[in-house]
Image (cartoon, rainbow, N blue to C red; front, top):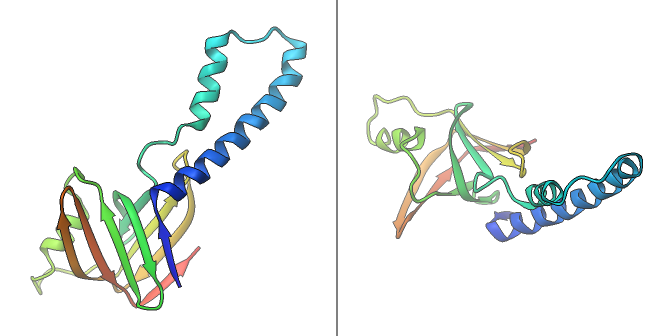
Length: 159
């Protein structure tokens, strides 16, 4: 089984959640508006526009040994092949992933015992967690402004 998480799927889910939120806000504000004066137009526009906007490009949080290291652009999980492919942002700051890459050829460096990916909603709250044990970077692809890492693992836990 293969799971693909891309920008188009996230945006459609966020749009649906935003439309639902706007609908719920309008139902709640209708009962409040009858008891008070309606808000000025700019305030109403600010509320509805902030609901529909995603929290930015930070939809996947990557961690090594339980510690957050950076946000990811895209992930692909191939459960049959025990592979995780992560796509990093173009101008990602130096993080634990870079340290992990640098230590791959040095046997004295400790290897991470687990990595994780948290799927975040538009507010930055964790919706789903993927945990991978005994990760090993098997391939690094750098092209254009992105870097894609292929990581093999022993076991996947989803919560």
